[in-house]
Length: 369
Image 1 (cartoon, one colour):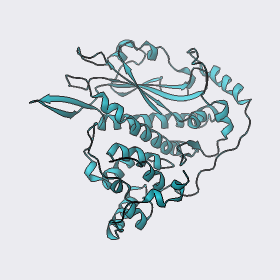
Image 2 (cartoon, rainbow, N blue to C red):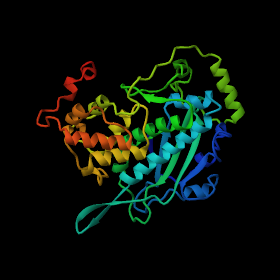
Image 3 (cartoon, rainbow, N blue to C red):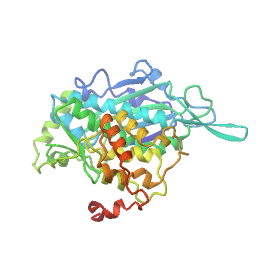
Image 4 (spheres, one colour):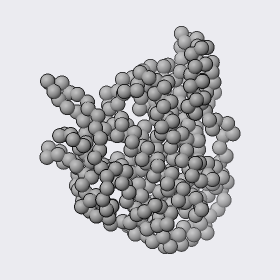
């Protein structure tokens, strides 16, 4: 999950003061890491320079909080052999999602000649802080990524509306990339159900019950050492009661879940690129890299390649779903070459495009919802 918090102060002691020792030994370096820039992540001075604003705005920057789905966080506590790979997968996914936000949501509005113009921006410095627990010592792999409110070289702050508008797509992209990276860096398989619930194949749901993250009180912040939190996790695990695991679908690892994808646009009057990115990332059940999603969306919807900000152009639901092509050529593959072959085949054998798009009415899964 991605949540965005506005920073109106350049006080960064909360981040520099917690070295997140609960992940010591399973994370490269310290808790702080530079996605762009350099300096000592334990120094308030070096970190505070990331938060850049203007004299006319109270906003200094943003805290982008990326939290791994609960089952993936639990793997860090249960699987010492692959814990480092899980943390590395998380950081790679954070970097990919921040890259998307910078590419599509970092917009500076410039007024010239009485007209507003949207200019692309770039953050000068980006710093993240990786943590492994919540305030109740439950496994909770997450990152605080600090960015400035003013883009590099700009005289005004970025358009926050664009940042928040693209947050849902960036979140879906983070989670899809994470599912993909977990499979690449560990022996686990992460997948997403049709109902939008993230799972790990073979992980008993009993662990989600003891580390559910749902507590009545927020709790006091505690700085845990690695040995302390491992002991706390072992104590919690001793209360484990098996509930069984949920098996992933037998098919669909290499193709898009077209039912999920099509259903994402129900009720929309028009579909933007960010909506397609969100729908595609969620419909890639077992995950897909951010670069793979970007290539797929740009190849299939070339009219949206330059779309960004809040004033994105939109296309029709029928065009977004490509239902006639899917009926003719089958579900869209996720791999680049296979997707290009699919696209070529679908153009050679076009379906009855003049027929109304009734994907959701004809699909049994959607009728049952």
